[in-house]
Length: 88
Image (cartoon, rainbow, N blue to C red; front, side, top):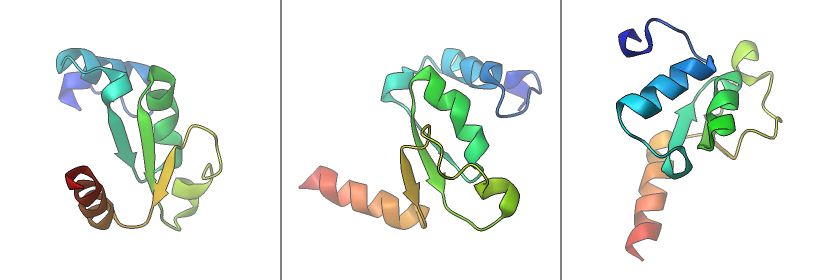
């Protein structure tokens, strides 16, 4: 938060500051988020987006938007699965 000058998500500037500070390539980055609308600007920058599914109305109201690449219910299970696929 302080590195983004206290700009809240989903501000585009918030994501740009993170990308610049850590010298990230957005096309090689993934954003995991539990609030759908926070994924929109990350997708605009070129990141892959993953929504951690939940039933909170404010978090899921945009659950069918095209800026969500993947939907998962369990982060640790997802990370284990992709690690197994990577090893294969």
